[in-house]
Image (cartoon, rainbow, N blue to C red; front, top):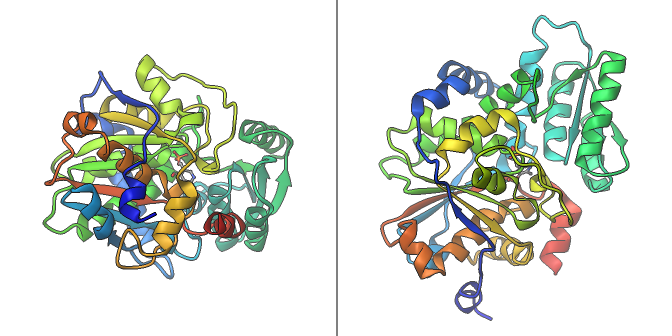
Length: 375
Ligand SMILES: Cc1ncc(COP(=O)(O)O)c(C=O)c1O
């Protein structure tokens, strides 16, 4: 089947308009202040090996969807860690140890955050303990060990691994560096978000005179999405339509937006997009997301391997792109939304639209990447 006939069949699962939308730049920058965003850029851009990741034009997909442009931020090239998470955990480690006598860093992770925390700990001469659930692949665990971390596997899902991490850390006096916030634990998640916002700084320069009309942001617990929104408030003088995409099996942001308050959902089946398979939006991101998101959309796992292959085989762009499972939902949701004429009109998606997508990770899980390519 040709690309054209194939993608014209793709569909999203659920779609929601946020009735409470009112983007308030001042309020957003009170939650993640400009000084924190600026300090993160200053620090991270001075790290060895720092280079902005490419902003690639998905010109071939664009032709099919009849939009003006599709920009794809390719985080497979983020340092040697292969995901945007490199910007968050490692930065939070570096900042939280200032004036802190704890010598052991701990975290719970679906993979990429742990890799970043392990790298940050190694760079700063600290020990690192990483808790993973039974759903995190051994190939991801191996990479974290290669950054010097002690990886501890916990029975159950992500939530179980986080509970175990908190318990053990409290018992042993370890410094938790988590990307999720809870009452009394907000500083570190804010630092990770400040780190992520470097992506928006780079995009604001790479985009030159173009204006982004729509941005699609993947959400797990919402940290990355909220950080990009803070970056929009900090670096752009206009507001694109902000769309959150989640796996349909873990739509905790959509359900919370619908309810107007944080809703915890139970995950019946873990999505292949492991980093986004989260049941509850995090506290700090929620404060930003609840008013600034325009639309939420969910997608199934059905198009993951096709999208991974289309990226690799240059069906979407002139160049080959290595995009892992969490890089796909921005593309699949955009295709699904574009295929629906009523939605196109509703969200103003047309031949003048410039859409920004995030390729959050490369082949961070090499085994899974090869499996998806071979499917
Ligand atoms: C690998 C990975 N983990 C996690 C997330 C979600 O980030 P957050 O939990 O901050 O919403 C993403 C977003 O796509 C991702 O690609």
